[in-house]
Image (cartoon, rainbow, N blue to C red):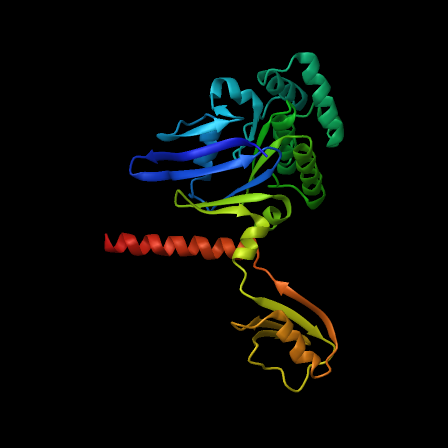
Length: 311
């Protein structure tokens, strides 16, 4: 697949702070891409350079196969920032129409697409409400609609589920899947790692202005696995310990074991089968993205603090 977005050696400094420090990655067309990092990591600065709000100090951005030109390409991008940009006193229908026309749609096309999305997200009765009268979740749905209704090639969603109840969060999640299936590329930025695991194909983790992780969700989880397995038995045998593994946790008849070097999962099974145990379940435990995220971010922060103390 070809890339919709390619970032090469991007740098952006504010006085003495390196907000983005030599970051490169690419995003494939039609993918759902996770851009992750703690507060102050450089995510917002990256997103603002991708949307043309900021210009990089150095490096390059290619959009859909050519050098990014904010004036021409911005109409092909939909950006939903974490800080919402709605006019509180304006009626919802009028605001959606105004924002759609800013993205280049004619009034007739804008009205058609607004009606489609308002019906799809159960917002038809909202037309004459004012934004100031909406709950946070309702405002989220309106902001989502105004971000995607002009059918952009690249959709950037910064914390899109903030304030949404589970029903509406699932509704928006299904729409994200649908947009990707119809050819849009989605950049998804959030602190909620369980949502990233469920939604994203590929992720990049940034911290302190640097890229520290880049890959598919499956590959990353395999890369950081610790050779741990769960085995659930009908009854625990007399001899649990073995040179093949170490028991690291136990919950009733479920054991969490870590396989020793030069041994395989079959050795664990053989140990219990030889004792005529009934094995009810056996599976590998992969680390969650949240666990990987915390270990990497804490590691890079500790390294930076140590460097600062010695410099």
